[in-house]
Amino acid sequence: MKGKILLLFFITIVLSSCQNISQSTTLNSETKSILNSKQPLDVVSTEGNGTESKERTEGRSDPSNNEVLPLSIGNLDLKGEFYDEMLRNPIDHDYEVEFNEFQNSKEITTLGWGALESKYSEIWDKELNQIYEKLLSKLDREPREALIESQKEWLQYHLRETKFVEKTFIDNGYLGSRGSVSLATVIRERIRERTMQLFEYRYLLDGEVEFLYQGNK
Image 1 (tube, one colour):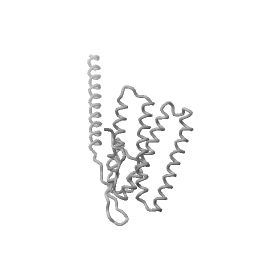
Image 2: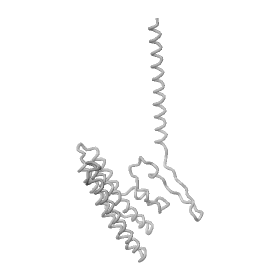
Image 3: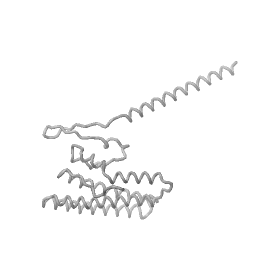
Image 4: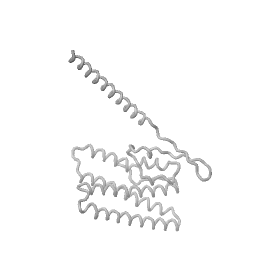
């Protein structure tokens, strides 16, 4: 008799635990559904002259968005139109495609990854030189001289920062076998960000966004 009572008690506990787990799973599923259904918001800001301007937060507030731009991009264009243009740029699109193909390939090597990063660093570098020259051609003497000085300082910073990381973390193996890949990624992102900054300056002057790179055919 005692055995039957203990058996019934054990079955009751098991059923109760299963019910709690089921409820917890349902709640987690509902929470994820709510989070996934949230739409990007339009933030309305008031400028100094009392007028209102809408700033689009699409792509900026969602960290899961694969097409995330540097925080410094799009801050001067309050309408958000330039930011949207940059989200659609052909270089990031092709990089994303190639990176996903690389991740899904059977042979993933640091050499292959580094080559991919270097390839797109060169592409962004060509764009940087192109937009720099175009921007210079549109400026008067004083802003032109200021841009030349600014670009010289950025280039010096870029080279010195790269050298520092190489000497401090790469050459001595501090970051391991993937250290060189990490540095290559940082270099690509740094050149990409500077290029987008110059693109934004030109966009503010004439509303044009024109890439030298036309994408993979």
